[in-house]
Length: 230
Image (tube, rainbow, N blue to C red; front, side):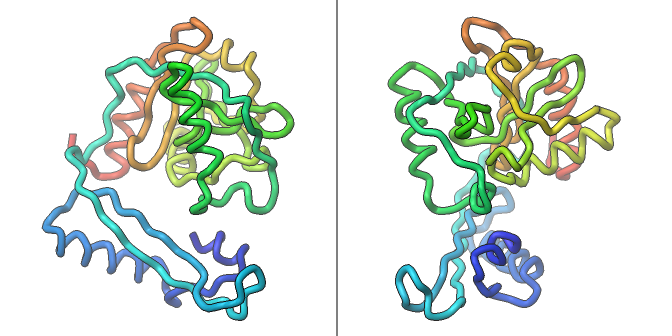
């Protein structure tokens, strides 16, 4: 969040953003009488100026919705994926930022549903697969993890960063390299990861069936790492 605001020349809403955000989240959860919630944090530029801002002020909004489960668990239902070809994403200084402009992901998800897929994979303008419409992507190939580099244009997701850290600490090799359709066919497992759902394992792509052996182990370590109840 701080890196994104610096990139966009926006002033932080507090000098100690981490402490401020933690305090506001706890206050929000107390007001909603829950300790298990999805918290959405929205930041936007304040003031006037339209496309040329007259100042770099910012405003922030916290919104919470209750979560039934506190822990992460693997999906039990099938998850079929396809590759979205209707629009590509160009890598650049803004491509790693998660913004309020989700048109590409919404459009891809709608088209995927029309085609009978549960998730669609997004490609960059080089044709490399960089993420899905709602998640970062990891492949398990020969016991190692492979995920696209940020330079390919994927969102710098929080769960992406945590999975890489946890895997390395667990002795699992992680490679950040471009992913092609051929890599999907070579993979033993395909994971879609985000903060809310943790790890979801793909079951089918182009009629190929995938395992979830490494994902099952990783989800247990992930729950221990986040302090979630099992």
